[in-house]
Image 1 (cartoon, rainbow, N blue to C red):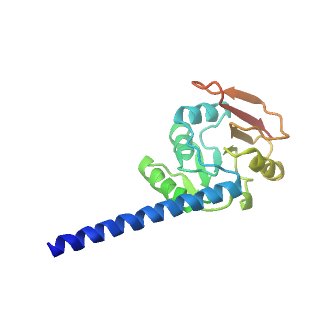
Image 2: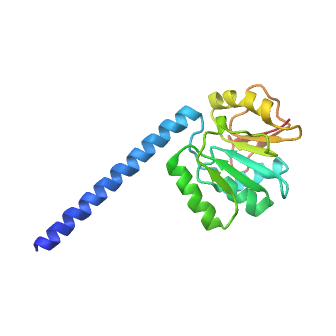
Image 3: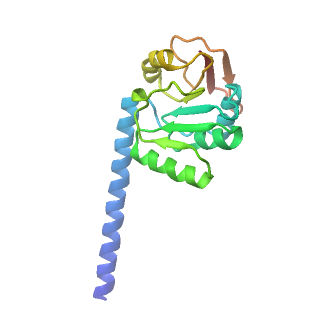
Length: 184
């Protein structure tokens, strides 16, 4: 009986500690998302495919996903389009989830735990991002300075403040969600 009580106390303690760790991870992730302007909001797979198709992503091209979350865009870019997909994620929690998802999807996508504002974007053919307007405003000059002519940018939901899109996509099954495709 004492043994069972000790096991129950250990189990409850472990569950409590794990709950605290998860809650702290989400709090830190929320803080990082607020700071970077990249909120966590999973993008439906059908939207990912639709946006990458609209951007004209081709086999062998390099796609950068800024604030890559769980790595879903990376997996779709590699598996569906044959692109070389590279993601940048600041959150340790989502970086780890991305690593697991990339492994499970059996792709060669790369994910880096790095601030994309401090990363050279010049090798990208296509840049995918879902940032709030404040984050997009901060990103515009970086894109202008670093992207090569012919590079494309896909911005999910919010437009780049001063760039003119070459395409605006009304995403299927949604009355409100849009994506914007830009060409340098």
